[in-house]
Length: 321
Ligand SMILES: NC(=O)c1ccc[n+]([C@@H]2O[C@H](COP(=O)([O-])OP(=O)(O)OC[C@H]3O[C@@H](n4cnc5c(N)ncnc54)[C@H](O)[C@@H]3O)[C@@H](O)[C@H]2O)c1
Image (cartoon, rainbow, N blue to C red; front, side, top):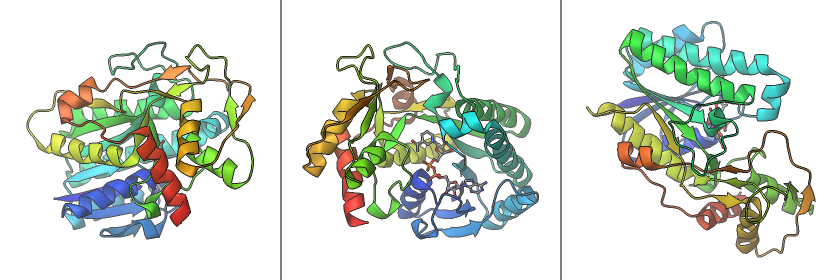
């Protein structure tokens, strides 16, 4: 089995690449190293290629054929909500046209199985206890919209080219499976708080007047290694005969508030943390927690790591970096 991983030098992709090569699969990583790192790719071939370049489709098809790839996992995308609001063209072009290139190359090289990184951002601001895949997606920013459009594109590609696809809608990803694969971008709560502590600043909590037990926003934090294992299970699902669903949430089914995450960071670092309370940010729902019924039923996958595991692995990765 050969899998071509687009964006495999990134934070999440490199965890999946490591698991695939550990189980003896041949892996080819395609990455332009714009936010990824060459050093993260071990046990796999690395092809440096920008999938938005004019000749990317031909080059990708060549590498798919040359490697004998039978599956593709597509991670490469921009992922900053604020940036997508300010510069939607970048997101339309790189996230949507980039995916179009990957799917066209798959069709050309007759690759059947595709796993796509979608996001809980497709749901927008749902006012529900648990977010199920049956909810009507209503993205509220261009980033989430590009992920939803990406899911439609997979459906069209399935129909036109006899492909089999799965879109995984990730909730809040954090932690590190291996210190050297840790997230180096400071966009999510755990790295933001750790960065503030390292700089001797108080972390800022955006709003403590939400309708939640401690007033701060609740999210579903999933360990990156659990998420990586979900990708392996998704590949096996595509390779099997039964495949009733093509869109699956990936989370733990348990929510943690911003203050609970800060407490976990305090435990892991041994530092007392007194956050500053700032105003709410636009577009932050009070609560976003994943229903895991579908992925458990379809892939037999469920998370096994706790919030403390997530935070401890992120703290250890910084310490050992
Ligand atoms: N990190 C999260 O919390 C999260 C949550 C939901 C969804 N996602 C999605 O998961 C995917 C991976 O996220 P990540 O956190 O690993 O991000 P990342 O930035 O670490 O990884 C993206 C990788 O894609 C590569 N890349 C980007 N543009 C490229 C291009 N044009 N050609 C070739 N390679 C390119 C980058 O160099 C990088 O290695 C993204 O699609 C993101 O939208 C991430």
